[in-house]
Length: 214
Image 1 (tube, one colour):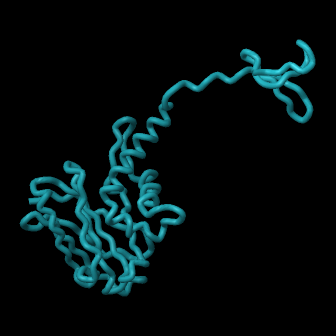
Image 2 (tube, rainbow, N blue to C red):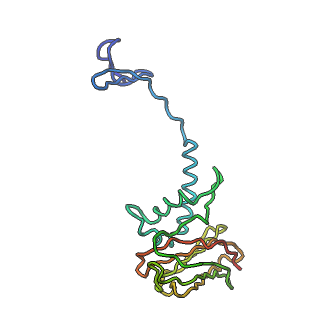
Image 3 (cartoon, helix red, strand yellow):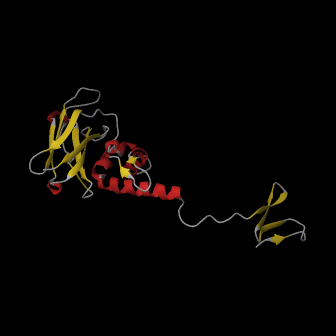
């Protein structure tokens, strides 16, 4: 409610009908009352919300990988949120409302440790994905003992399977078989990365492409 202090022609403060009275640096002035914003989300908000929900869902499925892969970048936030921040900006394709994850643009880990040379993924026997690479130990910070981490994501099942973070799977092995019997007959999106033994040095993940599981 507005208060008129000096009669009908004087200044006032507060709201009277559609007029708002106020004072700035000793000067009394009036302005029109702002109209209410329309209810509900604007198009831009709906657009951002759809992109956000799409990437949140994907990041959660890849959490076993992302929690390690973005550990160094998780400053005042969780690794998942750090991964979400990057991939929300760089790994979504399409136009509203038909957004999709651009799997070939996704980074599940980020760092300056060299990844392997010529990494590849192919269907193995008995519901497996066979990852191979060339050992490039000695290139920059790369060591024979760097741990290899791989994952396969099945869009149809919205499920990801990640290898164990273990010294059993190292750069010098040049080979890792990931068992994914749940995905038999389906296509998966695959990724590979490397970490130092203590997990502090991290490589940018590499997308090793789609693989049809036999």
